[in-house]
Amino acid sequence: MTARIPAALLLAGLLAGCSLPAVPTLMAAPNTARSTRWIPAAGSSYQIQYGGKLDLNVPAQIYDVDYQDTTAHEVALIHARGRRAVCYVDVGTWERWRPDAGEFPKADLGKPDGGWPGERWLNVADATSLEPIMTKRFQLCKSKGFDGMDPDNIDGYVNKTGFHLTYAEQLSYDTWVAAQAHRLGLTVDEKGDNDQVADLVKVFDFAVVEQCFAQGWCRQFQRYTDRNALVVDVEYGLTQNRFTSKTCPSDARYRETAILKHLNLNAWIVTCPH
Image 1 (cartoon, rainbow, N blue to C red):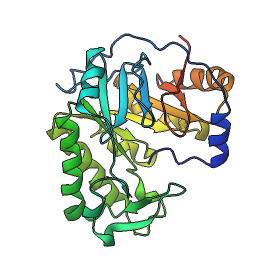
Image 2: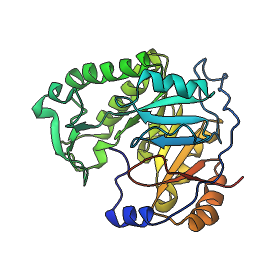
Image 3: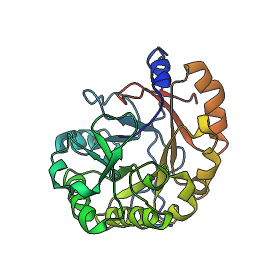
Image 4: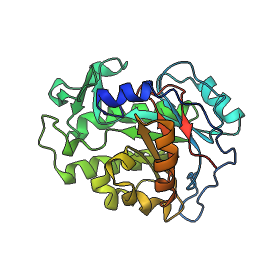
């Protein structure tokens, strides 16, 4: 699961009681100079919803929703409103509730992923076992009509996974994830992993990061916005006032799209004023 943030921040976010400001409605333009694939432009509006009934009333240009829980019909409804659909796929941890959970070799299941119940880190160095499973997930995204893919937990090598993953092994796996998405005609984002951004910016199309303002590393992802590709900074646990007065102007320096969400990633969202 995404967003490994302390419980105290979750409580702060849930108590924030913020209103929902307007979101820009202009559609993102593809970066045709780099690829014939759709690539969201810097400054595009973005919504992430993994929990609760899908709310299509949030006027975001791009919806990031779960690959399994979201139906092809719902993807079609997103498209019918002139928006793009990105599928969330966890590529770095095992989730016990997924239909394919039994397909993973037990030897590839590592330590629990922080405070997320039912999740364990995967041994991404075992490409022979993991790639066929992940390929089927990516193909499901394609069959449902998604435009892009949001692969999570691509930074196991800097976490306590139970495996001795190296920088090179992580980079090889992440590069394969991007290449496989591209083979299917899907755009794909770099989900965090800021320590490898200098390498990953060469293979991913845009970026979705978490807490880069709170942790002070948003500037590293300017590599994407410098080529007019979208960077989304998802922040948690802030009041609306601090988000709009501090996060928004800070992220704007790098042309990044900031959104404020609850950790449960339901439809609730606060965006920057325009």
